[in-house]
Image (cartoon, rainbow, N blue to C red):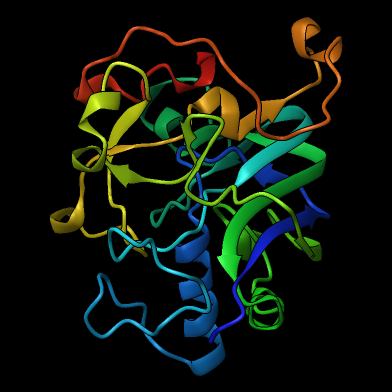
Length: 251
């Protein structure tokens, strides 16, 4: 019998991370790690995908693996100029006109940054695969989200599927139709790697205020002890699926 354990996997980053638009799924992250280890192309869906060292949910083929709960001490604004293939004027004005679109801003999470995942997995195999993850988030090749340390710890409780009456990963709403008025949902893919539109469906997810926490500059959070990365959040009125992510930063 495979020795699955309740695990908490904590990534500590040594460089700023671009604030993610969507939570990072741990099963998708490990699928990427296998692709890097074995020089494979990531495959979408169950057929042809390598098996992960994670237990599958008893009522489905989905892995018992949470999204990443990201904690940061603050955020910064940065600016960059998109590559322009034509002749660049000597005095380039990025404040307006034709070239304004080439001057873009992005927000990054300031160090210290921790991204915590939960799963029911094989500890030794999880440690081996996480060693192949050099960075998290967008623009990794440009130095963002570099991983300094990965810690894999056994914990008492299973926080990989549902914890404290909140979903911990993307779960299709058809699994729990009675929770539609309580849980947060969005249009996404429940299977890794998650980029193919044909696999997307309406899924429950942890609320943005749960999986992304930026403590600096927030008086409410500065006065609260951060003892557990998972905490209850107020329930807000559901948004339409078309606008589900439009107000994620204020959830």
